[in-house]
Amino acid sequence: MPKLITGVGCPYCGSSCDDLEVLVSDDETKVLEVHNACIIGNNLFHHANRPHPPANPPQAPA
Ligand code: SF4
Image (tube, rainbow, N blue to C red; front, side):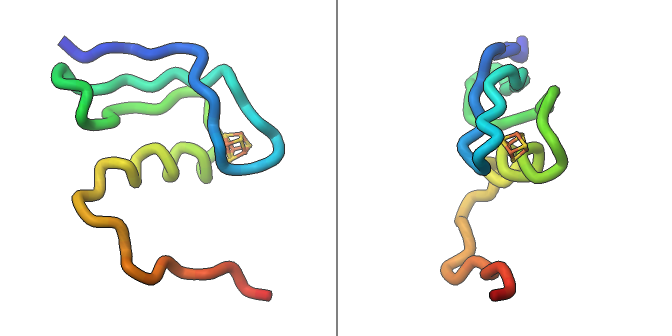
């Protein structure tokens, strides 16, 4: 049964949102849903499911 983790903090930006809810798989190895996050934070948590992170992640334009 999936597990809902509440009170999760997002580490991405200075807004420091700390009221996210993350639904994880039975074995707690996959993020299934993210609630209360903006689109950037939501994508950040879902990228944790990637088996191999990109070697050279894209950089923000200067
Ligand atoms: S959820 Fe969005 S606004 Fe909040 S800390 Fe994460 S990136 Fe920043």
